[in-house]
Length: 386
Ligand SMILES: Nc1ncnc2c1ncn2[C@@H]1O[C@H](COP(=O)(O)OP(=O)(O)OP(=O)(O)O)[C@@H](O)[C@H]1O
Ligand SMILES: [Mg+2]
Image (cartoon, rainbow, N blue to C red; front, side, top):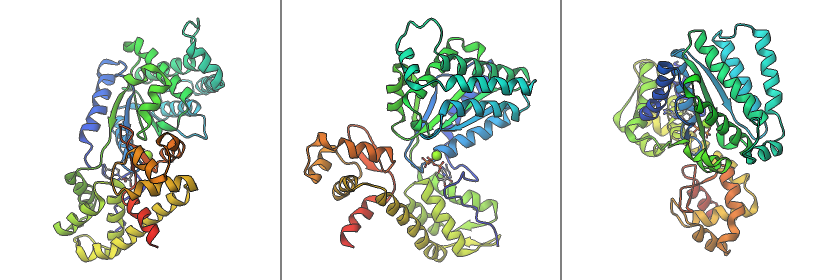
């Protein structure tokens, strides 16, 4: 029996599509390695959960590793100090590629910078606001010189430069975002001395959060990641299977693509349950009967995700979700939800913000919101029938 080639919830074996997005990143890598300079402002990919942000960033990291970059990966979380994690990841990235001449001194340096970026947020915010500070604010100055040194050390050792990858950027505090943006802006002031690039990913609130953190945050390059078009959705199913000598019938393939609606997580999930139902060997072709046996398991999984999200919502949030689902629309206006809840449209802000923070719904511009997980609206409507 062949091991399952699909990866629901994990980095895919083969990244389908995303060619233009990878090219954007590769352009920046080329600028760093060719000219030894800082490549552009922060590049930020944003999308709801399960669309493939982490997968894209990991593919970029693999590419950069091959090109001789030191690649520092940080995943932001509300419970951990983001800047300290950036420092730690930069430290390890250089050690991985043997770019550290004196490891003991390097460790000491990292410890000092970690202390400096640990300065309480309120103090940093006040200093950033006071534009006339004679010295750079401690965390900014410390992180700035660390990134400069890390990038030049990499290059001195024959490497291409430093690639900073920051995932879940929306989870960083406003102060941490402000520090990161200020550091990159300062490094850009002496672009030719700083061979590095910074690429980040986050939920759809990320652009707004960056712009709020620092006015020049809006000069970051924002790229929305979308659902996979049909052709790429097919590739997500066909390519990993082909590597194992397994094929799909055109009919089964189309049926999965239709069911998953371009949602990468669902493609992997249905691919995976179909594979398990079929227990294929090299030379097997997955067909409609395999899919029919695999699909209930995938739907069951999706329903548990719906149930978990529903269960994690407060009574007021559930009321909000019901009103939203009742419209039967993909993109729902604030007014329609407020009307459904029998409320004034200004007074629904709290549950709205909370649900966006939890990633259950996302803003799609002009005050409209939509569910982030396919089928969630139908699930909520079904609750009333049960
Ligand atoms: N381009 C792609 N080709 C094939 N599979 C993909 C692709 N992008 C994402 N996937 C699959 O979709 C699922 C979600 O991907 P990923 O974790 O990268 O999404 P995400 O946007 O980072 O989600 P989250 O916001 O929850 O972190 C994974 O199972 C992954 O294997
Ligand atoms: Mg992710």
